[in-house]
Image (cartoon, rainbow over all chains, first blue to last red; front, side, top):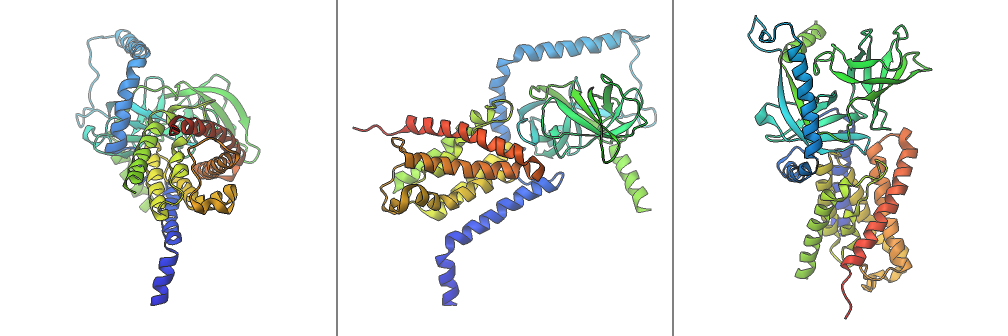
Length: 274
Length: 168
């Protein structure tokens, strides 16, 4: 017994080091291997608060560009509205349930990272505003990412510039599906993989979100085809997509709250169980 | 005794704040960013409490990870650096370091420079390796380590010169 105590006493630093190293490596590995459920994230009171304060200061510096972007978006929406046949008609709600199929929460990016291989954003709305994990995040130009962690007032987003993110997307013209991933290299480009060879793709075609995803509604803009390659092993197309969005400069974003989502997930679960 | 503790706590908070507010937003060429917050581990008193340093660097890394959403990579890198600090001391200063003659925040000598360089390289290598976590990114990791090391080193030395106590 004495010897055990002596041993622990003598090596107390080493034991402490190994213990702490074990904790930190566990944190690292679980953050890399699981899609979600990160223990330490910036969606909390302390870091969210600090980022919000910092963002308040930053906002003054680019108020003008943000205003211009919002005005442009308004103009676009107005032109959509005015070009309808009947401008006074309001879109009908779902007649069966009386609810809209998807709802939108306005939010703001208070912290943006784009330098590492796994990038996350922090938003200034959380559970109190109804944000839940796995909701889609877009802005007027295209998709931004998927909600990862939430706290009462803040939430984190897995950006599309994250090697872990994988989003269902399609070519607008031909409806051929593929998966949208990021190879970790350039912030302006993402890759669309597993597009079958039958698909007719041409440089400049638009890529939009596909209908297979329960997170994003169909036909939200992503980007334009920049380069087309054929994978030597799988013989599928690997397409480099130039994003419409400038991911290094994000302001206001919209979180999509899909009403059908739970129903779809339950349905698919049932299918699998049978 | 008490004043060293206070100085260290102050340094801990100040370096973290400066790192998060200023240096995390600095990106040269899109991916090179400096991490001068490890100055806390470098400048920790030579004869200070070792388990205290381990716990403090664990917390330091944990807060950095929290702010940058990076799992545990800063924590691991800081912890390893803190644990191997005595060995780096021995390597850079010879065996005499035990006699408390070393003051790091002073004029830059080759020994001091090599100590800071080694510490920064070790920290950055672990940080970027764990961040990529794939062998296919190995060249990218080495490039990032190299460029960021230069950047961090430069800023560390500037900070040391700025906070150097005046000689009377």
